[in-house]
Image (tube, rainbow, N blue to C red):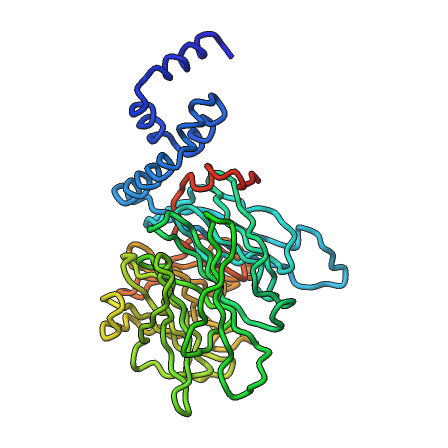
Length: 425
């Protein structure tokens, strides 16, 4: 290192702490991380929990002012089985990338998650919060591998084995949630586990709840949720207003009804709200909760389809006033879109909703038309589109060729940088 550079760094250290912090806050993420390796004093400032929180607030405000909000795209595809099948990495295609949530949908950068041995083909992205990504190895097989990863700084924390496993409780189905406890500045993973080995075949099974705290590094059990309910395995979450939301159903006399189970991450309490009154239980109905375009309430994607359904459709709902079930409003009903080729069912032409955008458009995945895919002459997977709900126009986002997608809001942060048990990858 040159003498002039050393003198410049030493002179920088004579500036008041407030000025040095302000300069660091203005640096791009990669430059900021490089600074932690230059001088011990700089690393001490940047790894300070107060600086990390200030950096996150500044990033969030900057994104809102400059329209630079990000979306994390996860795409996965595995080639079809052949007789010379092997475990070659060429058979698996996987994508993690950040895109600006703007009209052009520009790519910000590719990112990576930790490489660990998985029982399933890939991780499932449970959710994102303040730059952290919660990953679970539970797409098809339930495993006890959960990771909190910050791809911006390439650090992660592997969660310990939960209390409820096949060894301790027998068969179960589980759904996961991930959120932030603003009261204690702690990140929590919530696990709803429905036990399947009870003697009674008529009653709904017991659901036990355990919560992992990043601050303590351990799982703790909560009181069971009552009255009992049913929830599909790996039900997607929606994180809104500091609370996690999942769709569920409960028996009422001789029928079932849908409702929304809500967990207040800070208070550690459950509550409920209702689905649209017109939504009746139907085995051909697939539900998914999401976050509304303005981020202040919840949305509902409702798909009515099966292989032999004569009239498949896809509805998009928004709760205009948070937790006021009378405010549910159906925004649009979509029918199958595209050309039906030989061997396909009509329901295969329905788009699958993934999330709302800030513009109130909706990101969907749709089977790629092998004759008109935007990027490949012969595309084996699905393509991402953005739907303008007013005009019902589909705009390709230029990402295709994968069979499985998740899309989540994301913001770059330094969270985990100050944790001793976080490992680099």
